[in-house]
Image (cartoon, rainbow, N blue to C red; front, top):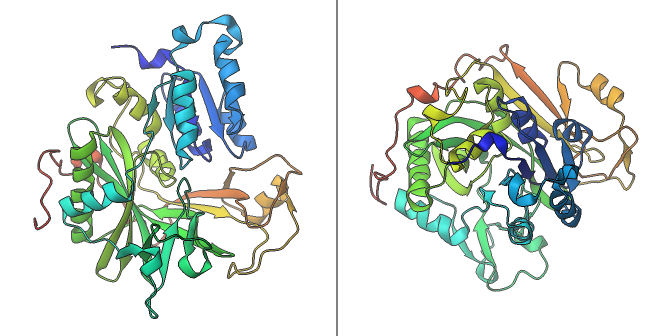
Length: 398
């Protein structure tokens, strides 16, 4: 077994700021390299080195040069971890070009997810081939491969060239998007909490991710079904560390959408409560450690605050239908004045032009004053009922 603390960590995702902040604050801090598509000012602050997603060649040169210190790459032994939705070929390039092991490198595809849902006996939205989704009273959605945060989701009539083999999903109207955060330590599958997702319509993109809030209460039926699906996922993959189960809720009904086998946006709020890095934990687990050997890894909330995270898209109206054609010049002082009591994150340097309809910045707040705070806390992970990975119920199990 090798010492994970000795290895540089490479974070790769659309935006790595949240994960990088958690890793930077974790015990046994290691060299941190980020690869993302935004290059925000605070991401630069959290990482020792940050590269744009199109600079994999520069990263290769940097690593082969021994991080500027002349240390051979084989001695550095960096480990990469995917912490956000990103095109699969980018992760594959990292693995094949540099032979760097990558943790959480892919999510279950549509076929795999359908099989997992059948094993768990949980409900999913109706799916069909795009060419046959013509019911007059129903709207279908398709999602472009390699996209995240709802950026690739379109209503079918707005999508040009949706071929006969492209799968579509029935839109569940007036449903609330939720995410359940789970963790597998090699022994148990445990639920850390559920979060409500905020979405924003932007042009022909009806469901762009715009933040999270929670943790929140859910019914025992929903929690049970989500845990069944999580257990089926672990049975089939052996995934270690955190992962996210996305679903929709409307009244007493719920439908499961997908599993993100990686660090997800709402986990930043849990990191504030548990006061440890989910990413650092995943790396230790991948290195062969288990929770009783992970330094300072305590699975118990250190606070009961209700958290909120909002992503702001400048240059759009309230409905999201109209987008201005003028870029917005970022001004940190002005943004802070607009959001008193909120921390500002994911922000560019002052004066950076932000194209209308694209993510501009994030606001974060942990509050004990919200009316739901007392009831929206979750039990400590160590207090939740463990789910043995070999006892996932069948399709008709209860």
